[in-house]
Length: 133
Length: 133
DNA sequence: CTTACTGTTTTATAAAATGCATACAGACTT
DNA sequence: AAGTCTGTATGCATTTTATAAAACAGTAAG
Image (cartoon, each protein chain N blue to C red):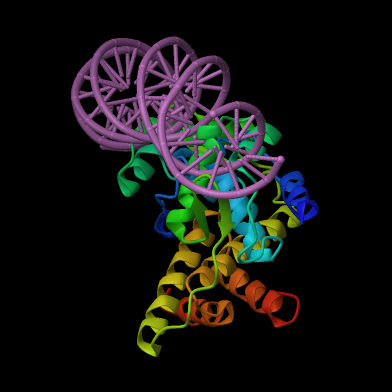
């Protein structure tokens, strides 16, 4: 289904936060695969699709995909496409929880340094991501 | 107390995952501040202390600290040291709401770029700030 | 075969990140 | 004044990141 692929593409976000682009791509694909949004055997977006969609260089996408292949998350087939590995590495619930914790801590620090209640920010996040996000 | 500082230093870990060192340092200090391990007004580890402890360049640590200062999380005082920023005074309800919106947007982007659900982060924030945070 | 799609590679360029060494400058203690 | 702590700054070398443009190579469908 191409619609699923489009959904994955739409959720890709790049932030100018110092993290290399290829790392951001790699981690977001890893999460998509680990959470099952990209299923085993399913075709990944082509490198060019990602490059065009996010306006980044083809080699940058390739860098991310190469990392994913080394990680065992995807299989790259020359001239045919890239596919999610039949047995993709599952995201360790521990790591996932740790990531949530880290993001929460960072958001709390960010809220406090700007003089607002972290709880208010949390409730706003929920409101924004209910339907419109 | 110096023991607290040592604890913060001991928790600093650098990983070879493609993320620049200064970004890892910056984010871990943000987490420490968000967690309350580093409290407002408290002195931060010296740039040289961090550089020596983690065997990285002094300018790399400086890069991280500069980011934190621009972020408003710390205050750098030449020749005296760096300190965790005091919480800013609350502002008008108008600006306050705008700030909440900004922090929420940032947190959502931060969560997505790290492959986690913003809603999960929001719920974690609420849980952490209920009693323990 | 031709076309159109895949991933692969090369060349060039530029910017950023890191390390290492060496200083400079302000503040405090003695 | 001297010493020692702080952050600040510079110069040089190296590696990594990112872009651009162009080409190369394998696969499949017309």
